View 1 (tube, helix red, strand yellow):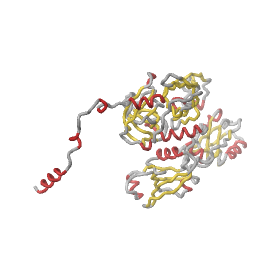
View 2 (cartoon, helix red, strand yellow):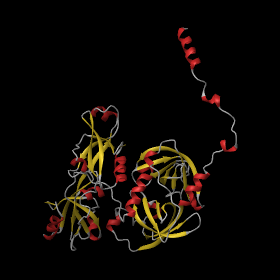
View 3 (cartoon, helix red, strand yellow):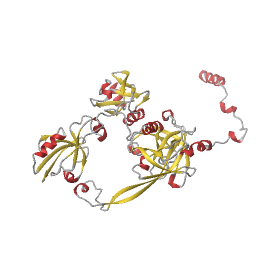
View 4 (cartoon, helix red, strand yellow):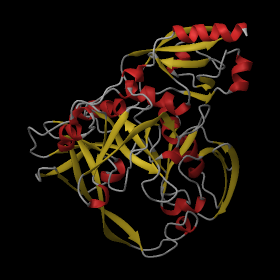
Length: 460
């Protein structure tokens, strides 16, 4: 009884609920909600893109088979025009447009149509299939409507957003929703790799490359795909964050032909509950370093295997894709502050942001007259390890191209040569020397991924 009395007294002392002070709306403006002002501000900067490319089509059904295509020549290819329809976003009045790589990548002709029916031809000045982004410059454009970039790192789950694009080619449409997730990563979630903003706003075919905008009409992301079981728009949409888009635009305007990412040179894994307990972390967070390349900027900064990376420049890291994303947003050049956990102590250090050493790769093509004719190889370095996704500890010589008679070897780009006819291959010159000795039988030892294998061939 005493406890109940205390509760009643305390409850009586509380102020009246806020809803008790509500009143009838005074006018229509107080009861209406419309995104019209946002759409009027943002929609003119979202464009329709019509792209066409020439693709080679083989007549044989076995031409694209990974086994038979290496053994047989299926004859000439037939050129075919492939058209694509998508959307794009104007980011500068002089005609810088951003879209998806899968909309304009490899296009021979690009036509961009604005909402006021003006048309421009465009040229891709920077494209990256890995991130599914492309930057286009419009010919003869000036005084165009352009969207301001928002800071995607400041977005929160629950924020209202609009997706603007040209679905199904019916004309520009707008769908609304909220941000339903951040830091989404993984190949099954959309094209490209990396880190996405997740939204429940409908993203239909043709919306690709369109704008995801906030309630201030600023660009929050480039719509790239939708994850759906039915094939319709009732799924989960993904957009490439505007912070990454900004880095692409900066590099494109600076004249870059390929997107430059800072190299990490480390192999990491997410920290789960068991690993957090083993490392002494109070709760699971960050990524644990499993291995480092000797030339890695993290290794040069004093980090070692077993350290847990917790953040870069104040932004958290909770997965390998997020680490790649954070580095890509910063871009090469300059430095970054890295937070890490070691032996129960949290500390910071500074790393240099630079591309992988050895970006200019010198390849060697094997001479004619043997089964190796058409094989192109190169000495392994950090840049090739990064490009081909090889283990950080990989050394020696790697296959970069297989053509002509070399297809008989069944080697593939990315294979690491270990030995030929018992002679170790540590440089392209070693293989050239073995071929100079001649022979009619060949024993090729190589590594593919984490597996070692042997191929035996006869003949010249």
